[in-house]
Image (tube, rainbow, N blue to C red; front, side, top):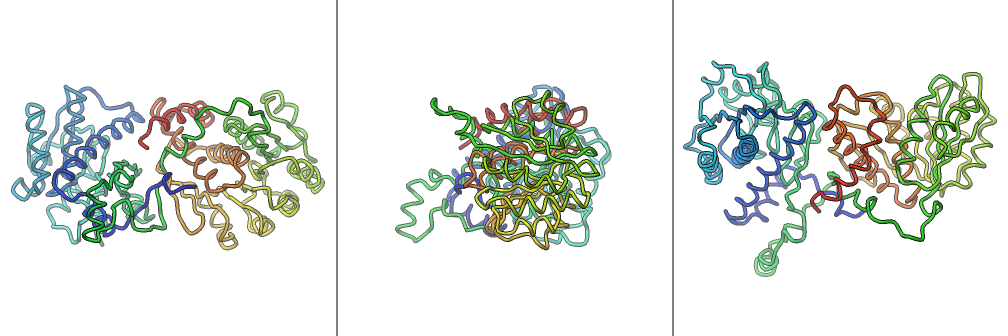
Length: 526
């Protein structure tokens, strides 16, 4: 997978140095601030659709500090006010207007000029006393240069905002204000969404900060593109020895981009046939868990794979074949618990000879004879056949049996605890989120797509089928298949939630948003 399909996640100090090299004058900074405000406003409007969208008369609470985060928040508010002519904003200058940095003041002038009649510059005491209902609270108090401790008045304000009973959506610019504050978690802004403007900073993906960050979104402002260097940066490199900003610090953490999916949406060669696009073998299912493998097969059928063979318990084949005749259904001998029997190993060995990738685990169950047969399957499949372990196949003994194979796994947190001690260092791990993390070759790749709509049974089964189908089509690039799978799965989930909400949906409805997700990715920034 090429670096252009992801962006580095930097420490706050690295990000500060990188931006200083890139944004060398006020005009460049102002341009970046405008792009950040516009991108944040659009992303917020999209995300708000998961809860019905913003009403025409939306009321905003904008918390503005001294610096660029406050400017970003003000410009985002200006764009929202422009989009919704009946909306109104309360703007709280947390430290007053006197200490505003020049660009934050410039952003305030934009709001005053474009929406003066629908804004009120007020103070903390007033908003606390009124306890008004707010559609959105925008947090632009502190940016990543924040150094604790926080003053008592600001800490009290953030604690009050966190506990406010009538704020519908809380959004942080870049980082939640107060992140890094020790000993007073109440004084850290608790965001529903954190919009990372231009660069994702490492505190965003730290597990300890998850409750404050909420759902992270990366707003790619083009900081890492070659064009961002420009001739001026190249000249400085020659005369001053200053590095081109495009040469970001090396990082062991990266954020995945929707552009990963573009190759999946292009025209296929006219002379291609079903053999061109791989042959996936899925092994799973049991009488106790008949649905999981069926969802894996459905997702694999939508992945673009050319051929799909599903090995399931013999008793399930007639029903499944009638429902999804596009797959080739093969019955394996059933044990006493309705899962894999020892005799199934030879059946699957024969089927695997024609496959280009294998998914093992959805709905297998945990009967001892089933797990023993799964071990046998791992031992007899060829090294050249990539193997994805999912669900019930994520057991230490099965992972050990797969040692030396080209291996991937899709564990949730509990499954990962079971196998982490024996997990091979050269394998690809897809640790399901939030956020989902793909770990390979010493680098962690984070997907910020998806959300609570995926918090329902069967979401992981769909992900396994999607990655398996992509893996069968490109068996030589395990990381690419994993990264494309998690982005595709998450982006489809976002579109599903924005269209139908987070609650009254079924897991398999996500399948209908896979093609719209490809179209969405085709129009994403490069």
